[in-house]
Amino acid sequence: MGPEELLRVADRVLATAAPGEQLEVVVSHSRDTEVRAYDGEIEAFTSAESAGFGVRVVIDGRQGFAYAGSLEADVISGTIADARDNAAFSSFDEFNGIVELDGVAVADLDLYDEALAALGPEQKIELALELERLVCAGDHRILGVETAEYADNIGTTVVASTAGVRSVSRETGCSLVAYSLAGSGDEVTTGFGFSVGRGVDELDMGDVARQAVERAVRLLGAGRAPSQRLTVVFDPWVTAQFLSIVGEAFSGTEVLRGRSFLADRVGEAIAPVQVGLVDDPTDLRWPSATATDAEGLATRRNVLIDGGVVQGFLHDGYSARTLGARPTGSAVRSGFKSTPSAGAQSLAMLPGPHSREAVLAAVGDGVYISDVQGLHSGVNPVSGDFSTGIEGSMIRGGELAEPVKEVTIASTLQRMLAEITMVGDDVTAMPMDAAGVTVAIADVTLSGN
Image 1: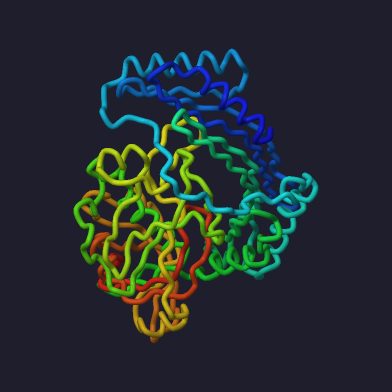
Image 2 (image 1 turned 45 degrees about the horizontal axis):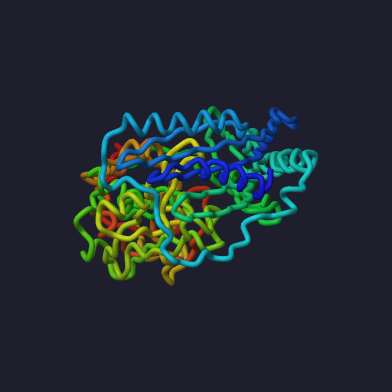
């Protein structure tokens, strides 16, 4: 389904608005494909199309929401009626409302790859099979591949409202992911690699295979390390996950819920002067780039940390009204089935001048963390307490040494931000809402033997 058809559905919903009633509708259509190869064969091939809409109704400070996975006329009518019923039974909140246009121009971003939309199933199958072949041939210690996967998404979303919002987003995305097994004697380790892009031409299959092989082989012979306080160096993959957690603290929604350790720290220095953090969905380097947010406002570059100092928070319409701020084009939602909230979309730490090798050399002795386990469950967003299991390698004399696993690191988010000593120059796109970069953090507790 094209944008015109989705816009017609949106207009049909808006035309039902009663006097004094605010309506917002999100209409989307997507086509998703996933191909998994195993042992030289295609283990699974799925391709599915879906369409649906969600409608939000605000009447006299009461909000109702309903959604449906169909765009049939009778379903649309029934869903609007359900949203109105839900509003009638909801609690009054003076800050409920549909976001108003704020005059920020929508960036002209090329987010749709016509070649991907035209790619046939045979080509997608061959991508998954070739990825598996490359991983298996990467090292004699590779025992096999758990999964070699190609996936893509082709989607169109329309957001429209009685406040004059009318946005259309057409986006494509694809990825290659491999999970590998390496072995030596009775020991088996795992590794992974990935590449993301808007089109197949942006995918780097060779790099995916290299990552999957290196991560698995590097852990062979890994053991526990003595408990100690030391400097850790985050692999870009780990930094991206760390920044995703930090980014939640900048959500105006989380501030309202009392779940942000940064709630009262605007204008305070929380990191060294060389640390900067931005959320910029208009940056085409990031797979999460988008021209409009989940409420249809133009996205923009929001500076969250500058010179180590907290600059402000990310807001959707509701958090902005409640906190007396302005929307920042930062509304997010998990598709048409949910209402918006405020959140990061494309976080990135500003790069430093140092290569990864220079960071390791400067650290001298420490631990290089290539992966983490249970990260989100090990973080308290209010207190900032941080604890997670890790895998990686010890750093000795500025170089990677013996591999380690079955150990944990612990600190607080506040202390870790304050103890950043170096930031690398290798800012890397990741399949999430944050980019990665090599980062060194001092005075972290490692618990092992």
